[in-house]
Image: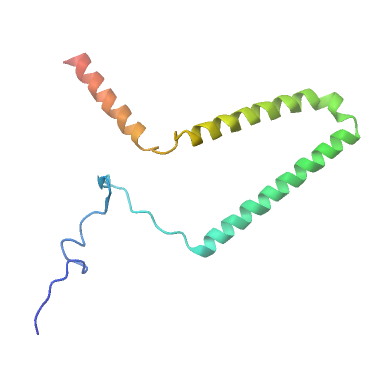
Length: 125
């Protein structure tokens, strides 16, 4: 019986190597992403949809109540201000997302640390 060494068997040196990405080895302490079970995803989606539907229904009731009781005279300006501010933040978020500001959220922290090290060397050397 011949012993064939397979590189991917548990305990082999290649099986003990840290996971790598396309850009090279992952940073120490980082794990490879785990798949979320399909049942958990369905549950999360159901919770999000039900919560959103409840929020929309309450928002609709709120506007009906204000409109029926001359509430816009009382709180209309405040509600309009809050809605415009929320819409502005939503537009800024959408603009940032569409222009790729969230494409690489990990590199800024490393750039900040590298910049601080460089500035420390410039200041103290």
